[in-house]
Image (cartoon, rainbow, N blue to C red; front, side, top):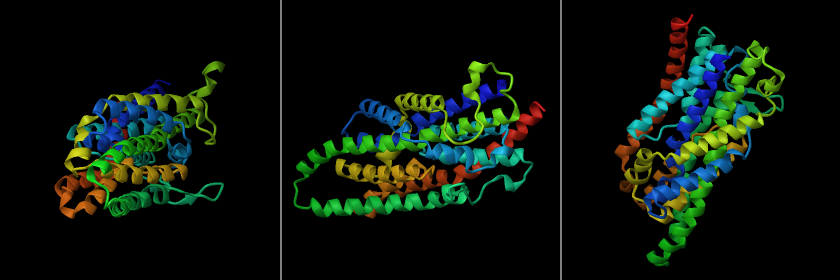
Length: 355
């Protein structure tokens, strides 16, 4: 039971860190274009992250039972997965790099599950179908979206910006600034909503996985009757108390800010104006919302970053500061393997310390 409480605390810590780590995903552009101050933008993002977190549980179900064999997972597995993701998130936040919290959690879970199974790669669900015939597993839900969503973000952002450039070619710059200064409030709110609908659910899924593990392993068997809300026998619905807790924790983390990453996303990659911010945010928000409805734990960081790059490339290729982009891409590439190794190593370390 003590280990479960540690898992719960680690999960909420991850959710809180995810909130301020990924705040920039929703508000970097609206801050860089000076439509809102950082304080105003962070407040708006916190509110819409909270609303988005209530939007559904499809992503949570993917995390809880669609990536690794839940029967092979122990409470230590979940704890080490979360700890590995937290370490990577804090490290990249300190560097000001917008890495993916989603992939950090998934990498940590895969690595710790592999260590728990004694190196048996069969514990990882590569590709399968659920009871309804829908595709689940790392390939359709993680690997394929990891490559496709940034490409869609880049070309989608570029296409929307190109269309807007043609439509607005005879409109005065002052009027364009005025129109999209207002419109960007809506696109930033939509982006924050999309982020909440996808990212908040990942922690819901990991907590539900811990509850399932505790139930099946007998950790909760001696609990009093009033504590029955902790028991989860199968993955049908994510418990309501988990949804509520994760939603408010992410909103609190979002309210804490994350200006280091806002600076990288909104100022260092591309110099943006409100129309560019609107194009990038609208593109990313639609992609993330679509992924959430399909239960795909897509990286909001990847999507908004490449949308910004695509918008900037329409201005001119040299408008994108490719040196900064290279640093961001390296963070993307390293996230899954590094957190996988962290999760794997932490399981063995914990066993060595407390066999």
